[in-house]
Image 1 (cartoon, helix red, strand yellow):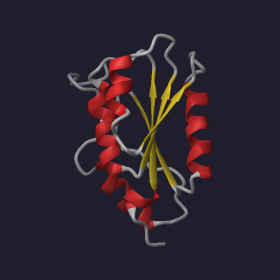
Image 2 (spheres, helix red, strand yellow):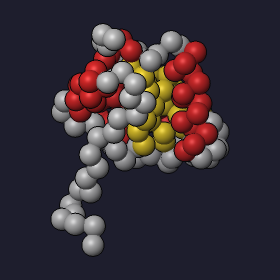
Image 3 (cartoon, one colour):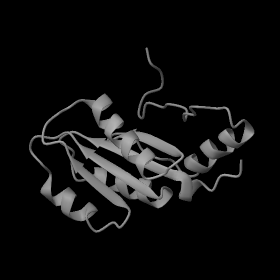
Length: 132
């Protein structure tokens, strides 16, 4: 298959009482995806953040009105992505960051074998030399 990353990729970021700095993560997802589903599990909303992301054209904000858990939030986004015709869904939480070229590299791995169901970036703990 010949994949065009941006046209076939939707993303989801799950929020739970986020700070304003999560905007940078959402913006990076927006720049690397055709659509970003922002699923908000917060009881008390960050109105400033919601207002800022409302100006990004490819954002779909979903207010769960309460914490339904990350699995339910991801399932909501997955269902919407399928309904909207996307082939891929990049799942993120509010603390995860996209690195430069990450999305392109993930697609390069998928292109190697179209039977691949999941690809994932290498996980790094910032500020830690080891897990011990």
